[in-house]
Length: 369
Length: 269
Ligand SMILES: Nc1ncnc2c1ncn2[C@@H]1O[C@H](COP(=O)(O)OP(=O)(O)OP(=O)(O)O)[C@@H](O)[C@H]1O
Ligand SMILES: [Mg+2]
Image (cartoon, rainbow over all chains, first blue to last red; front, top):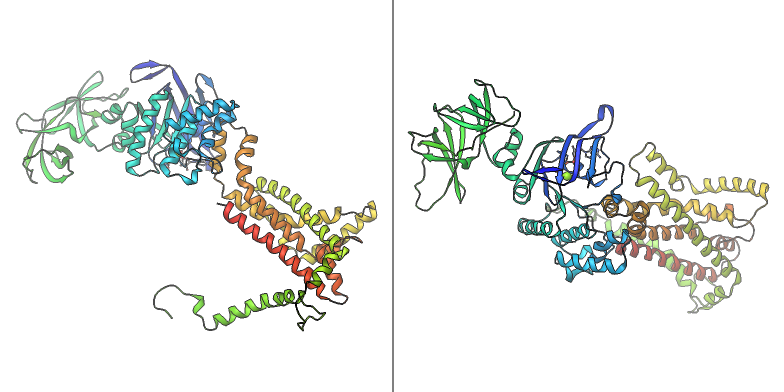
């Protein structure tokens, strides 16, 4: 069983205390450290993290190209330790696509079924269905070298989907595409996932892609999973400095703890008022100590100075089209970025202006640090 | 000197002259050989009119036919065996990751490229002679073995070049799509290696066809190949029949080498 965004569902992939070490002795490199993960059937699950954090390695372990050094991995309830990639009900869309250059598009798509020993008629029917699914019917007889990058991408997808795997692994499948095509393929991927109901494990280092497409996201850094949650949780309630910093833009404030009740802390704000903030699970913040809290730039609003949570002075403003970023200095000297929606006829705010700020309820999140 | 652009060797004074001299030295003797293969008379220096009589003589010559067939047969068998062995050697040395002594293995496989042919020839002569004494066997086996060993590096190099350009992700993709290691090799690796294997075979074939020294030292009586036969004939009087044979031999080599380039260029993509 996996718990996904509060609901209990069947676990497709269960990873427990998994580690991966490359090399030995002095040269040993821990690419994955104590990974614990349950991915639910039919979930769109994303591994997000900077280059070198171990995303591909984790995918390769799931696919069977690498064996874990420690820990356990089960797919569909069955331990797969020691099984080669050809024995696992898992298919991969490679970052380089890895289409077979000497086969046509149709032969590429049918390869998995052929290896499974399916009869000719079934292969032909599935290939036709897959071609339709990725809208490549017209190019079935072309070679991979005779189609565009976006089309190769679709063929790679179709080839991996054709054997109806339980899990589809996608390693940055969109990173080679230009922006417009990438947006289009994001929608396409989401549609395919919904239509087929196959569990997707998707790797990206593009946070926007992760936020828009995923049911859940695991943010990784240096071989560890730092936070696991829905896009909303990852964005609005980051529990880790790295996660908060990696995703979107955010304000870090160092604030003293006034008091704690349950999973809520009350933090003293520079202006003398106090505000509630969420505490990460398991963190005990002692009253009187200082913690780091984060708040997104769009979660504060300009208000009259009297009765405001915070007061600040405008240092500079950057125009972004839909909004303007105001670079503020709080009364205790900490920097604060405020995102202000642009509206016609709205008077510009000049540097030097003093403002009051009201924080959205529940906007403050304490980090584990 | 031009003010813009990189250094160009073509602007060195005398470059054209050197180039022309080189080409003349390369091709003129061969052109003359070919021309006099069509000479009506016996002379190698006085043109006496066009004729195909020396070609007719060459084709009518039983010995020429025999040694030509032996040469082609030997080259085919030796290049075939060498290609199989070289393919296995390539798979054993490039698809297994780095290992200790890898460079050493490369050097050992490529022995015939480094050891002077005459040294190999003499070594083989002594070696083969002692086996002949021990076993009494005097068949073509010695020539086949010697040519095969000699051809291996020439087959090995193009096959290895081809395999090294193969994306390892292709084999991973095959395994991911439920192919067993044998199936992945059979359906992905091997078909993609075919251009390299063909090129290796052809190169080996030409090399075997060409080699004189090794054959000369290893052959038993009545095992002349075309080159050793020609060498033997030259010790007697030279008639334009030899020119005709040489021209045909040249043509065969050209055809194979051209095919080699076409294969490596068009199928190699
Ligand atoms: N076979 C290997 N031997 C040694 N180290 C390896 C091996 N494979 C990966 N690593 C190391 O493990 C770390 C994680 O690599 P991985 O490919 O999983 O990163 P990634 O998160 O996919 O990065 P990217 O976004 O750049 O693709 C890297 O530091 C890498 O150098
Ligand atoms: Mg990667």
